[in-house]
Length: 293
Ligand SMILES: [Zn+2]
Image (cartoon, rainbow, N blue to C red; front, side):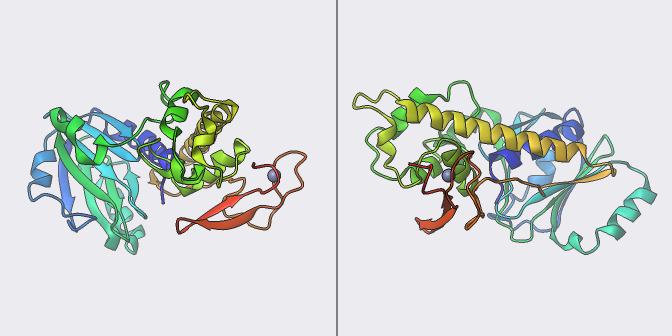
């Protein structure tokens, strides 16, 4: 499932082809995504210029000249595919090459720049919604989200405050979108390993009695920011590697330190531990029992 770095990579791939361009044509092949697209979906987009492609947690926020915002979420299996070039010849080739996948191309944006952006989602847990800009603060999908982990406001003091009095595990706390937005199973495991903190540790132990952050909170915030920045950097290089005119936004190469590496040697220098898998709240956790305390 895409987490914050993957969504940020998609944003960086979409921004140059969508910003400043109009929706010339919008095709909806299947409107029953996670929830149904509104009946007037295509009509509200058509003719509007994209003023910016932003992101909040795992949502893409595409701002339109009409004052509407198109919210898009990749769900479990969503991806965008960008095709550049408007010639009919190229278009035919594109459809031919992608005939097998076209069954899952549920929404297709034809931009005035000639770029064609398709949303492909075999499992259809992805979603799209149009919200008026002025109603964004009250939008239920966004309203309860915690701070952006890469924002300047997110620091050890903020994380410690959010964890004060929490008797749940650090794994559960960091997976809670109200504590910090955009992290999922993978990057929570990776951040905890970098911070050398056990996923089972009680969340409140990163704060002192007064709620002040201790050294663990400092390490954890550093670990979260570092792992996200590294993943975004890797995603950015995968974007640059696309030499073809078309690019898949949603397929990523990753180098995880502990995630899905049960039985392998812990990568922490000097540590003799072996990565272990346990189940917490129904989800796999990967960690090193030696260096993560
Ligand atoms: Zn270790």
